[in-house]
Image (cartoon, rainbow, N blue to C red; front, side, top):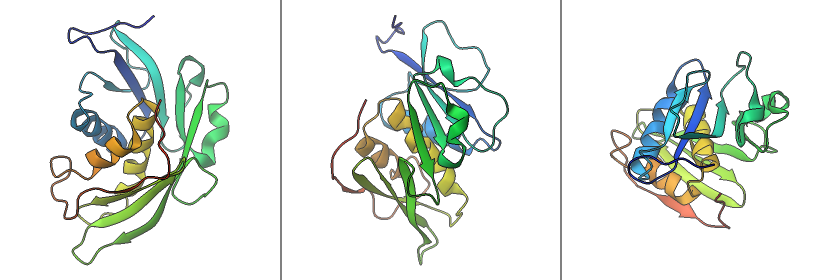
Length: 185
C-alpha cells in the first residue's frame, strides 16, 4: 500500500546507519536537487511518518545492529554485504573492490583543489567533482549516490545533482556523463 503526502507524491524513506552524517547530508541535497523533496532521510531506528514507505536502508561502515528484512533495498559497502542478508535486494558500493555494483575510480585532487572521481556501475560511468580537496568526501558521495539510485532516481539525475553549484559551493565543469545503459527502478 502506497501512501501519499499533500503534494500527491509517494514519500519514500531512506534510513541511514553511519557515524559522521556526510552521506545523509549529501543525500538530502540530492533529493532536493532532483525534485524529490518529499523523500525522507532519517537515522535508522527513528520513527517514520505514517505516509512513508521503507524502500532503502543505507549502511555506511561497520554499523550496529540492524534488520534489513523490512526494506526493499539495502545499500551497503561491498566489504560488509554479508550483513545485508535477508534484504529483498542489495546494492553494493566500494572505494576499492571492483566486484561492487558501484565503484569509485580514478579518485584524484585536481590542480584547483577539487576532488574528482568516476562512479562506475550497472553499465554506466559518471564523473563527479566535489570542491575543497577533501578525499574523505568521496565515500559519502558514493554512498549517497547509490542510495538515491536505490530510491528510484535515475543515475544521470543523481550525477547532475552531485555536480550542481547549488549542491556544492563550487563546481567548474558541471556534469560529464557517458551512457552505457541506464539503471532506474
